Amino acid sequence: MDRSKKLRCAIYTRKSTEEGLEQEFNSLDAQRESCAAYILSQAHEGWGNMPELYDDGGYSGGNMNRPGLAQLMLDVKAGKIDVIVVYKVDRLTRSLADFAKIVEILDDAGASFVSVTQAFNTTSSMGRLTLNVLLSFAQFEREVTSERIRDKFAASKKKGMWMGGSIPFGYRLEKRKLLIDVEEAEKVRHIFRRYAALNSIPQLQLELKNAGYRTRSRALKTGQTIGGVEFGTGALAYMLKNPVYIGKTAHQGSLYDGEHNAIIDQELFDEVQAITKSNCHDAMLGKRAANPSLLTGMLLDPDGNAMSPVQARKKDRRYRYYATRVDLIDPHSKAWRTSAGPLEKIVIAELAAALENPDLRYANDIRLQDQLREAQQIANKLRSSGIVAQRSILMDLKTIAAISEEKLTLSYECPIAREVRHLVVNANLAQKGSNIRILPSKSGNGADSAADTGLLELIAKAFAARQHLFEAKPNPIVEDFSRRHQIRLARLSCLSPEIIAAILSGKQPATMTARSLLRIGTLPLCWNEQNKQLGFS
Image: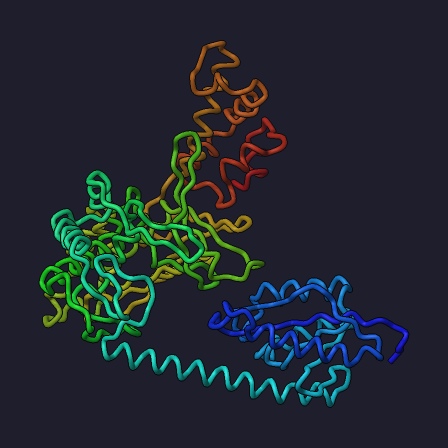
C-alpha cells in the first residue's frame, strides 16, 4: 500500500430497532467510537476519518432501502470515499445478494471496506469466500428469526390476541387489548344496518357524507394528524367485510375467536356478506356496468393471453374492443386488439346454432330428450336476451373463446350429455399490425354477414361530399370538413357498383377498412382497374 496516499475513511453504523436511540450515548455512538479508534490506529497508513455521518437507526439489514446506506453508496460512486469502516459486517448487510451488489460498487470505484472486529480483505478471493460464509450465517440467522416471529404471530392470532396494526373504527386500544368505543361502535352498527337496507356502498357513502360521518383522527409521532375525513367507498367495503366486528380475528384465511367483544351480531354480519357477494356477482355479469362487455374473462388472444374490454370515443361515438391485457405479456411482445361487436355477434350465433343442432348420435336418444329441449331453450334465450342474460348463459356453459389469425375456437360445456365441446368457426380474421378484424363466417354455420359500419359511413359521406361540391347543395354531413378532405371523400363516390354492393353486404376483402380506403393514393376511373386494385377480381 502506498503510505503517501491519504485514504478517506467513512464510518457506517446501523441498528435494527429504534429502541435506545433516544439515549445520550447509544449503540450507533458506540459503533462509531470503535470505528474511529480503529481508523486512528491506522493513521500511519494514511487513513483519515471523514466528518460525514452515515447512520441508519431503526433499519433492517435485510435490504438496502436505508437512507444512510444509499447516501454512502452515492458518495462511493462519486469517488469521495476510499474505505468503508463498519463495526461488524452484518451492520453493512445481512443479505448475500446485497453484499454482492455492494462489493461490485466498491470494485468499480476502487474502494474497499473494513470490519473493525473481523479481519477481512475484499481484494482477495479467499477474503471474499470467508465473507460469503459469514454472510450466509448472518442471512440464515435473519431468516430463522423471521420464521420465529411469524410463528409467534400466528400462535397469538389463534388465541385471539390483538397483534397490532390500525385500530379498527369502533374500538380503542388499552393495554394491548381492543375495547369497544361506545360512540364509534354505534356509528359502526348504523353503517352495517344502512348497507343492509341500501344494498349499495356508493349510496351508503353519500348518505354518510350528508350525515357528517368522519373517520377517526390520529396524531402521528411526527406531530402530523391524519384521518378526520369522509368515509370512502374503499374504507366502507373493508369495514363491512372485517370479521373483527363479530369478535373474530383473521389470519391466513382462517377465523379465530378474539379476546375482544363483538359490535355486530352474527345475523346482521351474515346478511351484509350475502349482499356483498350478490353485488360482486352482479358486477361480474355486468349488471351494474353502464356498457357491459359480453366476453369479459372468456376471451384469449392468438398467444393464449387473456383479453379485456377497452373503449374509445370519437365525436360522441363509442367504439368497443377487446385487447390483450398488457400486464400478462412481456413489455416487448405484441398486444392484440379486435373489434367487440362483430366478434360477439359471431359467438352468439355460432353457439346458438350448435346448441340447436345436436350430433346425430344424440338426436334419437330417448334418454336425452329433456337435455335436447333444454339446449334448444338456451339457444333461443341466447338469441333473444339482452347482454347481461347472454353473459350469464355463457358463464353457465363455461365458454372460452380463443381467436387466431385464421379461426375462432369456442369451447363450452354442452347441456347434452354434459360434455365439453370444441367448435371451430370458419370466420376470416385478418391481421393488420396488432389489430385483428373479424369478418363474418362464410360457411353458413350460423353467423350472418355484417356490413362494416365504418365503411358504410365513409360511402355515405362520399356521396354527400359529391353532392356538396358538384351540385353546390349545402350538406351538414360534410360542410364542416376542409375542401381538401371533401375532395378525397367525393372521389370515393366513383367506386364501381360491384365494390359498393360488396361493402353494403359486408363481402368486401378482409383487408379493406375505412382508413385504408380513404388513404388510397390514386383511384382509377375504370371500374375493372378499381376491382383489380382493391382485390375484387
